[in-house]
Image (tube, rainbow, N blue to C red; front, side, top):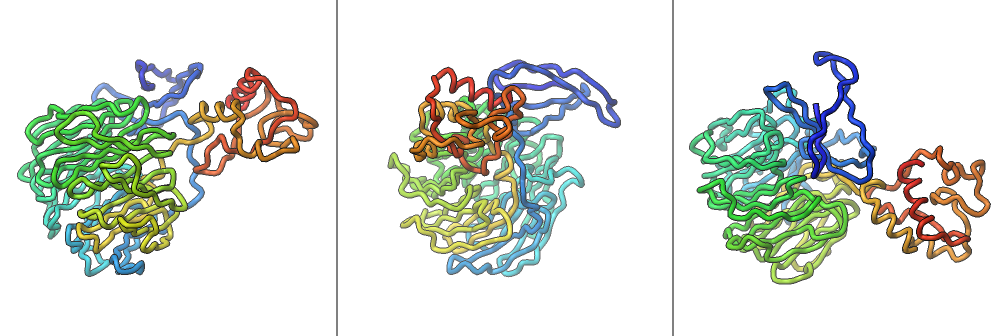
Length: 514
């Protein structure tokens, strides 16, 4: 049993108690002087298990305050926001949803099932159950994709990649303990690919056989994935600590492009234009920096990049690569013209945007948000044409090629692994405190002390304000509303101005409870 930190060698963990049949406890201790991505690995000498699959971070645990028990699959027409139909999946959650070019057929991957629908009815034409007990109840394993004509469906379960015909016949299955994460099929249905999280592989297939044409061994999970319309190109992105934007030819597992996008932000999502000339990648960053990368597929360095204020979990691109859409944790949908340095517009939802999709001509954009809404927008305006309020977080959306039909599904997959917690980005908090950029502090002109601002000052004592005056007995507890920047916590200017050194010491005392 060992723990692996980003950029360092694996550390062996010490067994403390228990046994391997009923459960064993392992421990590794260290003095933390920085933040790290991490992964646990356990091996019996034959197989290796990883947790988390995607990497991880030494940030506080996310607490979900909703039960998320009312999940559904929805089909809409562009004409209005009343669903044509909906299908109740209850506690199950949608991993992703896709739709054929003409909107006639829909495929959906949930925790436990792959569903296939006709546009005409909310009753599934067929469904396939994944390996019993193998799926993660919170989401995160296996996608589904559909060919342009709806004739072929590629479905990923944790331990298998499955190719189906439209009538539900299993054409073939590829099974291994690989942890299928991302799945993509070419528009013509001839080629498909899988990105894995156990084996850290990109695996490329022909529809003719479950024997791979080739495999590529990455060093991190392969998350982002998109196969071009005729299968000639494959765009893929890897998680931390690798963080690579890849482009492959169907002929070889030697990358045409292998570009390191970031020192600490996974490449979470990828899309390739139908004309195969452009590929776009979105990064799961934790702060404001470059998070959207566009490549011309005849070059191995970015053609252009753009910045968002938080993670990008979903990107899509128009058929000719002219328009790019991205959904971000900063609550915004971004519409980008590849020839412009700034977005054409950005639309701010009420919460984080986990999924976006654009019509082939770039005229219509669908988006799904943690605010429980499905949005339809036009290229011409950031004001939505309509929105629809669901009962749960909208985790996946897809729009038909001509923008006539929209499928959406609810769940938590795109909202569960998130940073931006008090400890996740301490440098930003420290910088704002030191430079006096705290907005509330600037507003308070009377210099009143505020209990709970982390500073023991003025008339405050342990009895009147134990939160601030607990000294070395402090336990670092910081309840900051989800999605808000920790540095914008309510604060006030101190009566007695502190030195830079004092501010630094105060910060670390609050951070580490000392």
